[in-house]
Length: 601
Image (cartoon, rainbow, N blue to C red; front, side):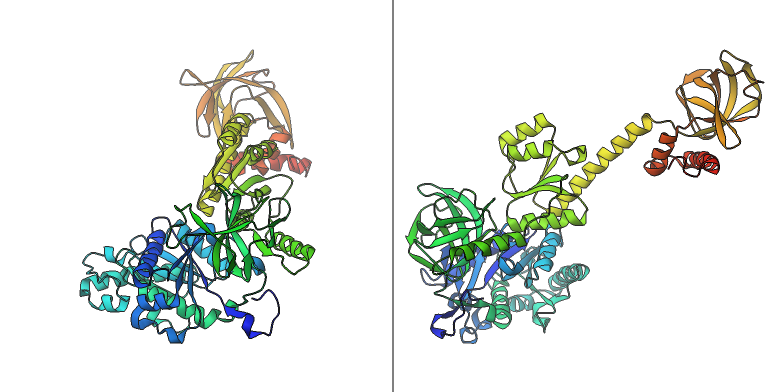
């Protein structure tokens, strides 16, 4: 979308679609990117493929060279594809304005041997939420037993050359992936059978090792972009640049810089820019625009060359003052001939759009980008876990300070997605009794926390159960009076519940209870025991009554249940006590409620 309305075709240009690569760890995301880059380097003239900050641009003529007869450059007017180099959620969940993802289109990499894994499902959730079109690269077909590789060949050609057995094995694995996509709500098929790519997901069998299927992958990406995204790729080349922060990095000689993917307009040295910050938008002036030297790897290369101007779509490192508070995932906007306050308002509105709702009590959440912070907040919201503070960045001591103030011990917690824990924060957490959970799969992080909460609740319930009177109904056996008083010692049968020492004994008189004594001891076959369960016959010592006066043979007695204890048992712990104990509790409540309907409520 253009930044400024213009009818001048001279200023309108088609930008390169931005491609993100997602998938579970070890399924081959990086290998696939490396294969595409490697093929492009071999195919293109020197400098035909350009390395950007955090991205690699593969132009149309190079794609055509790799894809061979699959791609006729005359069918396309988009300039090629820009692959984001940092594969996975980090780049993909970095949101930009109007609720879209940073990427225009995505490749979901799935290992044909492993099928769907936790991060596969999570990636699909993100794709659904951002409504980003994608294709599936069914990777590692070369590892199928009996596969005979033809390096860099289109997949249909190499597929036809396989033995029946190898083809059958590949088919089975591909249809398992198609079935798993269906389970997640996506209609899918092998890409050459797909008629409508907007309604169905194309699955492209590939090998990141041998290059098989890579021509098809690039062909489908170009075809989808040309057919469905051409209008969205129209930008005003001379308009003020709009982009998203990929990473905030300290760069020797330049201070804090922002690795930015520009998706509209241009950015120039000396431009005033507005960048989303942790508290307020940052207004600063571009001191330098840095890009890697040709064909250099951005992740290892630190020698940059300075350029005066960059147009979308591109990855560029921006050096400017006051960027220490910039956030990964935040918007970057060039001001140029527009009103500064208006641009600041635009950035604030965009940040407000992805702000996380917080409450007075809850857990502290940290994530690597604004997009993943929002994805975390969505997942916690669905799990009904409140958030007290949510920020982009590594876990720092101040986060521990906030978590340590939680009233509920279950909320003395920090959940970190794809972030590091600073050493002093880890030390502080040990001192302040704050628990830290980190993971690079959102739903696993939520599961870990929920398991932790269940363990705490179980421990709390166990503690409560240990310190609470429990219902028990028992009968004095005829001819089992061993001592009449001081204390009375009688044989009893426990009908329901658990008899415990040092509890008060009551009898029902009408619908009220009257205390008759205290249970001082329990013996089973001559041995002292602490408790007796339903069905047991034991002898008990009851301090207080005299047999024949306050208590009698064949009489039913109860352990006294204070009203407060009865309420806790019924409302909070009913599922934690045995069925016979629940039955005794219900009988006890029923009798009292005939007299007082609100007893124990």
